[in-house]
Length: 304
Image (cartoon, rainbow, N blue to C red; front, side):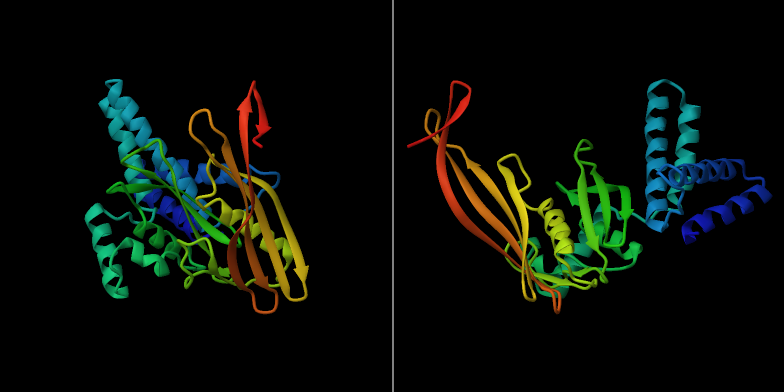
């Protein structure tokens, strides 16, 4: 049983003995939600701490939304109850930083590294950790969006990484997705991760296989500038030669021409090369070829 789930159960027992109705009712509902999540898949399983945090975050969000709905419906007593339950749930979630605290942390990090500003902080852009709490702490340091804090919404974890999802207060329709790799899977603390070429860190899991490199490269692609409507992936392939494994994602970029003129399609290869002996990774981006096309009568034609 995860430590966080055990804490919830212990605190429920304490609340029941103290006849604390609010805390008892809230913790019962939360533990029921955890149990529902544990039996939701094909087979029952125990949630780890990161997954319990995800359930708690979801339950807290439900209380906030319900409180707002009751306020709008003229039922302030129900809104107050929902907020009170949300406060109980919030005691079990990682502490979230205020805007002033966040600015202080960023300033301290800049001073510590000698960086001149956010663009100069690329070398400390990502950490690796096997500790979910440290992963969330790193996410807190990146939680500012358009000058405002982004609330923690979900936390997911597996044997490779933690994913933290946030909702910006500046735009509640948006979503910020952070990832922190486990150190025993991948260490990317030194490379300049704002670039799409050069060193990409070191794979620490064993064995080092072409299949694992393929999964990693395709996952990392989701966090690049290539993941937008102007790019389309043509293929993803892996080659092995001795101790060298190369994963290539071939994609096409559409460069739109002026109205009435031809558009340009640029084919390029984004490659990850791994040394299967020591796990070192490098990235490269190379042009393959380009050609021009135009749309005519509902079909695409080549421009000659």
